[in-house]
Length: 206
Image 1 (cartoon, one colour):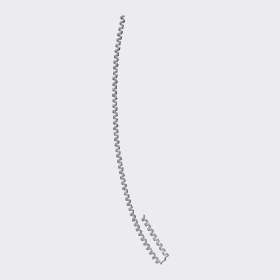
Image 2 (cartoon, rainbow, N blue to C red):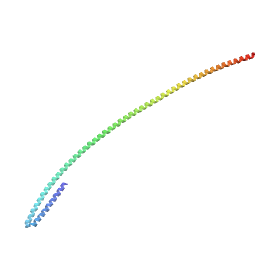
Image 3 (cartoon, rainbow, N blue to C red):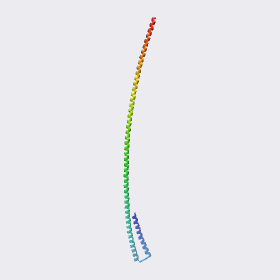
Image 4 (tube, rainbow, N blue to C red):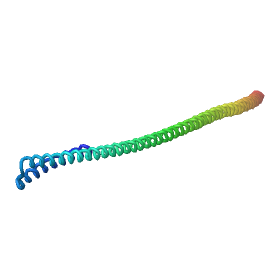
C-alpha cells in the first residue's frame, strides 16, 4: 500500500517536472527570443537536463520505494513472526489451561464418584443393619408373643385345674352332705315309725 503511494507520488513529481520544464522553456522563448539554432540548442540542453533530472529522480524514487518496500516487508515479517509467536504462546497457554481444567474436572468427577460409592456403601450397610435389627426385633416380638401365649395357656390350664378341683371338692361335699342328710332323714323316719308303733300298742292295750 505504501509502495503504491510512493510510486504514485514519484509519477506525479515526474509529470510536474516535465510540465514545469516545458512551461519554463516556453516562457524563456517568449521573453528572450533567440536564433533558431540557439533556440534548438537551448531546448536540447534543457531537454537533456530535464531528462537526466527525471532519470535521477526516478532512480532515487525507485531506490526509496525499494527501501520502503524492504522495510515494510521486514516490518510485516517481524509483525507476522510476533503475531505467530503470540498465537503459539496463546495456543500453548490455552492448551495448558484446557489440560488443567480437564485434570481438575477429572479429579472432581473421580472424587464425586468415590463419594457416591462410599455413601452408597454406608447406606447399604446401614440398611442391612436396619434390616437385621428389624428382623431381630420381629423375632424377639414373635418369641415374646409365643412365650406370653404359652404362659397364658399354662395359667389357663392351672386355673381350669384349680376350678376342677374346687368343683370336685364341691361335688364330694354335696354328696357327703346328701348322704348325711339322707341318713338323718332315715334315722328320723325310723324313730318316727317306732314312736308311732309304740303309740298304737298302748292304744290297743287300753
